[in-house]
Image (cartoon, rainbow, N blue to C red; front, side, top):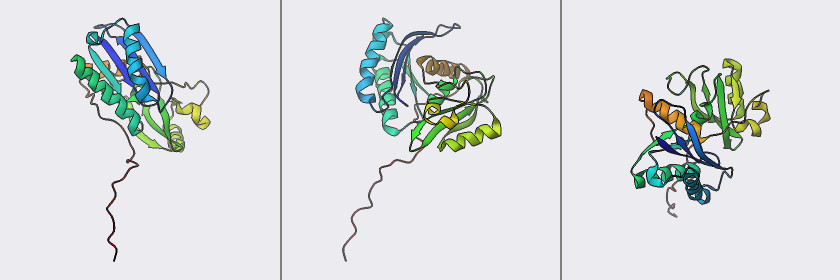
Length: 224
């Protein structure tokens, strides 16, 4: 099964991964643009390059997986809409998985994954050691948004290592040997495949975690 993987929760990540029945995942192509605001311009050309590197036409893709965040509204909207449009165009299935889950996929110990949420806050979730996406008890703290101190409080009470892009932004989250792990095509496909094996839903539901900044006005007040 050949997967096109897309994530726009931070920068833009696109890749192609082969998932043989009962075999190990094989990454055929991977491209990353670290710009957290250039998703619209970067995504379509990156998809084209990834397919070319994998020597595939769009019609040879069997499934699409897209990161659902948490992340700001605009970036997620670009990734999810593009993944849906591609899947509909070629007639294949599309799955959504948490971008935090994708980062945690390759770890083995108890970890907290933290990414930049801007406004001096982080998106984060915690995962149990020795388990994986196929285990219902793998994620022990659902995705949340808050100050880095929330993560430190969790680690103090529950132990675990903090990984993810936020460790490079907030030194207090980093520890000796901590990894600045990021979303990868392999992680996205790994979580999607594990979820499908056990029947866990993989909806295209974006994880915004914040209220919109734009509010509808109440209308003009009448002068008296």
